[in-house]
Image 1: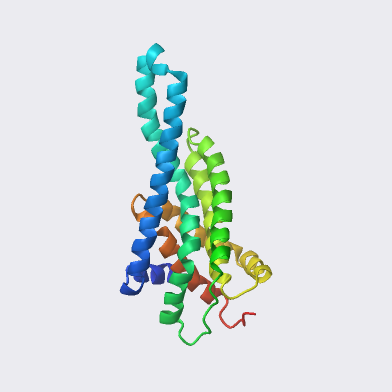
Image 2 (image 1 turned 135 degrees about the vertical axis):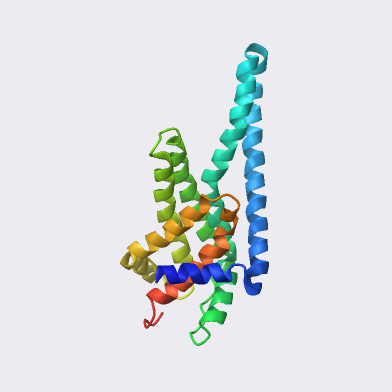
Length: 229
């Protein structure tokens, strides 16, 4: 069931029907990452200026700038799931409409989430993801735990977010939560796929569209034969 959903999403993510949405999603993701990068760089620059390391310890100053580049890159990796959450909330309905129309034409179409609600969903999960990944970032220098903590935390968060966004087009919030708990193992496994995708440079930029398409398929398979309210 999950494997079928993964392959279906992989086939569709670069299809003509989703290509325009994919490029827009990548553009928004990159724009948000650039904004985060500029913000972090500015904060680090202010810190170095206020502490005036160059005047007293020029070697430490140079080393600090070297670590800043690497450190900011690592920080962006840990922040990517939160950025993905915002982008997914913005584009999920567009992706879902394409997938539902193409692959499930006989089924009643889902109801698009109100724009404000979709964005709030994304921001809510982005905030939770940011908090969890900041904790995971603190474990970065502990071998054997750092990647594991990042992977497990994001498998749960991404699986939960994308499933709730996809299922929310058909079910009230309380039923969405019930379905997620009922199929928590499958939802977690789907989240693990997305968490693994986030770890792959460049390819991780397709996470919002791929994740939305995959979870639409998975939700359809999990609820086949059950009437949505």
